[in-house]
Amino acid sequence: MSAEIFDKVRQLGKDIQESAPKSMEELEQFRIKYLGSKNVLKSLFGEIRNIANEQKKEFGQLVNSVKQSAEQKFSSLKNELESAAEDAAAQDLDLSMPGEPLQLGSRHPIAVTMNRIIKIFERIGFVVADDREIEDDWHNFTAMNTPEDHPARDMQDTFYLLNSTEMLLRTHTSSVQSRVMVNAQPPIRIIAPGRVYRNETISARSHCQFHQVEGLYVDENVSFADLKQTLLYFAREMFGPEAKIRLRPSYFPFTEPSAEVDVYLGTATEKDYRLTKGTGWLEILGCGMVDPAVLENCGIDSSKYSGFAFGMGIERQALRLYDIGDIRLFFENDVRFLKQFASAL
Ligand code: DAH
Image 1 (cartoon, protein in one colour):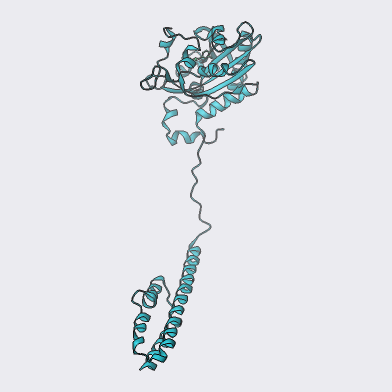
Image 2: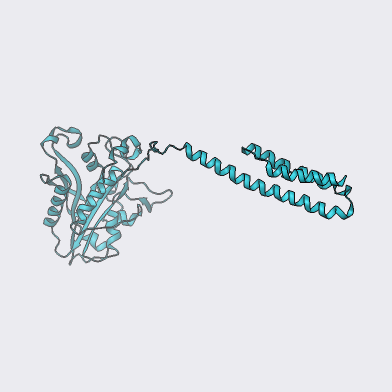
């Protein structure tokens, strides 16, 4: 009787060595049969009570060694089948297939235009000053010589933060002028590019958010001639060597005297009503000599120093550079629109 059982276990050991599952499914059958919770070895272990006492130890060792060989066989079979599956997958790979097209992003036309403007001013020694978009009333208005009851405050319909008469979304990058001047003494030569907000009705020509580049130059003996020459240099770099500028007297609370500046874009645009109202001239910025009151508000001695400042809109120049008809396109993030600027820097 016990010899028979010994033979049975040995036969099982042989079966295990000889079994050759060809798939993961067959391997699973192998596992269930020899290693699963109801495996055949377990039932053989149960037979130990029918074995003569002096043979019990030998029998136990035999069953154990068969069990170990089943475990080893299982893990080596598993490795083989898995690496065979990987090889097969690799063989299916067609390396000559074209790859998945990579969707490259592109710079936004506003960023491209802004970067061009920044570079032009950097070449003549201006440095970029960056500051906050959520601003307080003092830096945006009061320091800039725009007192509470001044009509200029009505010119700019402002977004105030909820429940606040103090904090607002800056209405112009001129707020950076006061931010810089309270912290530094002349010579100051900065440009401040960034986003600004006004509570305006959205249309093809205006938006409640847009971009400006501010310029500020404060030193001893800065004159209106310096301002004019700086702006002419800018216009030629931006719009070509034939560009002309004209200054029209204007009013801003923070400059005295003040002017608005138009650039002449050439005879071809004289018929372009959309861009130049049929004149060939495009209005691009406001400017002037920094009002001494602004210098004093910010702790700069106005008897010693003078300065000029300007603030220009970016969107209008971008419309011109890329011949775009509607300002809203800049903010809709339609990739069909944005993709067209993929090659722009
Ligand atoms: N801040 C003005 C605006 O948003 C533009 C401007 C005008 C800025 C004259 C200046 C300046 O620095 O001197 O309409």
